[in-house]
Amino acid sequence: MSEDNMSNIISSCASCGIAEVDEIKLMECDDCDLVRYCGIKCEQEDKLQHKQACKKRAAELRDELLFKQPESSHRGDCPICMIPLQLD
Image (cartoon, rainbow, N blue to C red; front, side, top):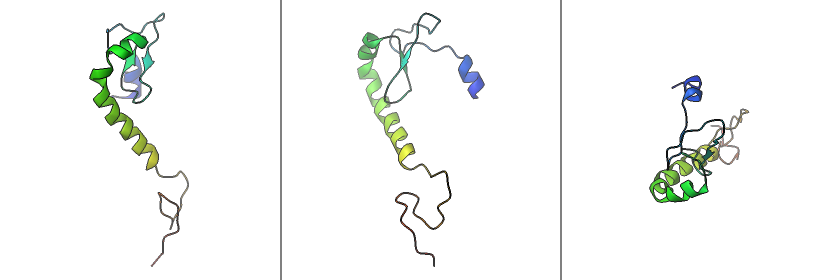
């Protein structure tokens, strides 16, 4: 789906299913951003069901940040530690 289509989808609480409308703002999971909750009570109630998927997605997000290539070109440097590599 494109971002335009995603913005038109109505979000709902992962625990109770209440839809996000003007007076109800949903909070995203702090670790994974996969699910949304209408309040802390619903977040706590859904914690056991969400825990495994949350840990997996949070690890993926950390890996993306860790291994993200730098914006500028570092030719001849290791993209992870920036130590110059020997050019043969």
